[in-house]
Length: 497
Image (cartoon, rainbow, N blue to C red; front, side, top):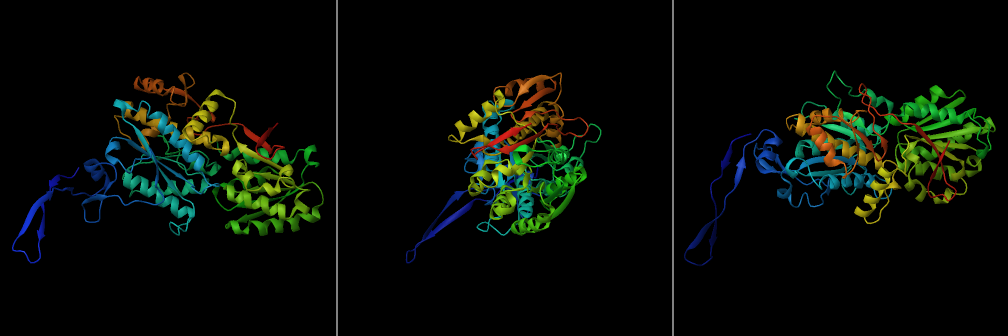
């Protein structure tokens, strides 16, 4: 830490025009610290201080993309949280179609962990940054915004763990930014929904040293295989035999390209491929696929792989506008389609397109399990009756935040209290021991998890999203692929065999 210095006394003087004389008084004293890095200023003055261009500490400038926090008064009362462990999140904050349910799920985990805190009652806080396109804030693309948000969290607030981002391409962008040497500390990224298989090897375990990219959803390695197998099975409810001609419309990013490649590898029929970089092109690709597939006759399928709710909504609405063709086509969606926001924004297509839709989802969340029901109940209580199941990955986000919290406990007790991303990642190596005490995510087992870690024992964590059994080599979870359709009421999803 740089040496602290005491500035000279500042004086304010009052000069009365036309009066003989003036008065001066000492009004304040100002502490300052010379610095070369932001950590010096956080150590000297607390939360919300950074090293300025002049080599002196100054307060962090507010970021309009990172306004949301939990506790909600984190920025208003920084002194109250001077010893708090600050985590971060990166999600889409667009109302209705974004990830605000996931933001709340992360906040819920923080709220519950704070019921007893860590060592000596040390508490947690989280800063939520958004990467959505928003012209009222700036002109950043989502990729530019996710990089800017990651830098803001790590460089200004020293966050050792970031929950998110929600998509594979943005997770890759954030991870590549944070591994640059100009960032003074290691940062752990835990995504609840970045499922591209290509991310498995982005930062692998090296001996006993863990990687810094983790996720609570399993990768899409099996998703394309299962989707292809379902397309090649007769589905009497769709009135079709085996699909022998199909088109796949996919987003040209890490997720879309990866899943489309897996589908092409496993599908034995004729598959036409249409990639898009701009969502505005979705409607035209729907029309193009219509023209290219129409001569193929019956037993035709169209697969849509979009990484956002908005993209899926645009596809379904475009298909509805071409209902003469699409009401006779088998339609298949990737995991972004299993979201209630999709249904609320495509209601006009309920009669025509919904019955034709099938989809795949990586992993199966048991909504009837006691752990999930406890999570959903606490979510509703904390957020004014809102429903956690409005977003497919809410349980995965809740689990991801709890994993970050468990990791800090291991680092506190067994890594000499060093709360870097790497030290916390070492803690994640201790959560999947089949012989360890079973710990259910949430407040009830939090003290038990701390006790086990303090004693140097690994634990066996069960999440609201299901089992969290990480492979010790590739540090990935495994789960069965869920095959679904939209229910008859058009307001939810039914799981198919």
